[in-house]
Amino acid sequence: MSEELTKQTEDLTLDKQETVLSSKEEFTAKHPLNSKWTLWYTKPQTNSREQWHDLLKPVITFSSVEEFWGIYNSIPAANQLPLKSDYHLFKEGIKPEWEDEQNSKGGRWQYAFSNKREIYSTINDLWLRGLLSVIGETIEDDEDEVNGIVLNIRKSAIRIGVWTRDCDESKLKTVGERLKKVLKLADEQKVDFMSHDESNKKGSEPQILI
Image (tube, rainbow, N blue to C red):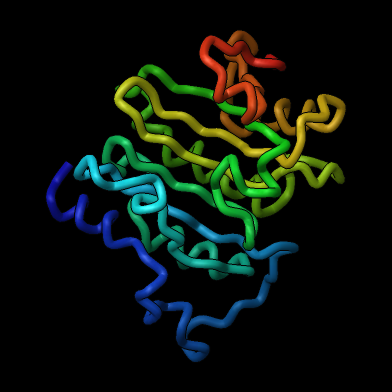
């Protein structure tokens, strides 16, 4: 990872207000989304004094298709992120933390791509498919379960996860089945669901596998 790219990802912030989205003359939104979404970024820890809240920062909030593409094309791609960094895309007003009131009773569907050398050539496409399925609300029907989607870059694996607001299996199956299709997984490749409460317990097993 080059110093330039590391600096670019560390500097992702809401404080920089001058973007293509700031000029009505250059960029006019025409296709509003049903919800507003906030992109968050977790930078890698650089010293032991940094806590989670020091690493997690909101980048920008958007509410239209055109704004989404403007942002997506302006930030580092998934396969360019440094280790121990994350992208989080959540509905406005929901923080990408288990403790958030709208996440606390839910959990997450996820899949871990362990062969990083192989997945690096396709992770950008898969992450984009995930983003579009969430903001376009095609990853579910009328369940209103999905709060956001997360990309984790780790040494052992690259993970994509979809966070839900509760753990009602009857509402969750559609999300899991569609996430599997979005990620282009084979039948034998399973996405798993685990509640945030269970994730805190050592040795916990997934509650649902699809």
